[in-house]
Length: 65
Image (cartoon, rainbow, N blue to C red; front, side, top):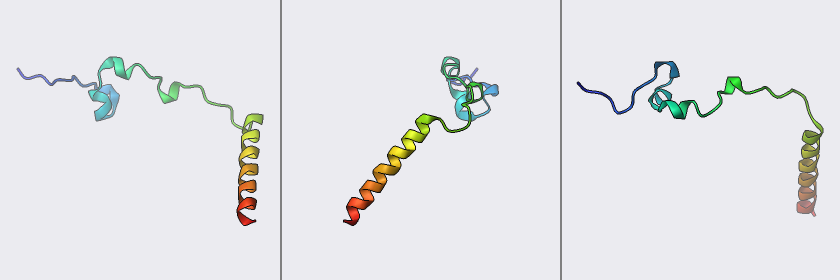
């Protein structure tokens, strides 16, 4: 009787995932089970955008002069 070194899991839906041991597949949270982030901009997003915009603007102005 010949057995493969790694037993496959037909429910994994991908050959690579099927070849992984069960404890590795169950360690991570599936993407679908993660809570979704509320859509829209927060104040932190606005602050990050303004910091990037101002830093880029200053870099371009310094480059021109």
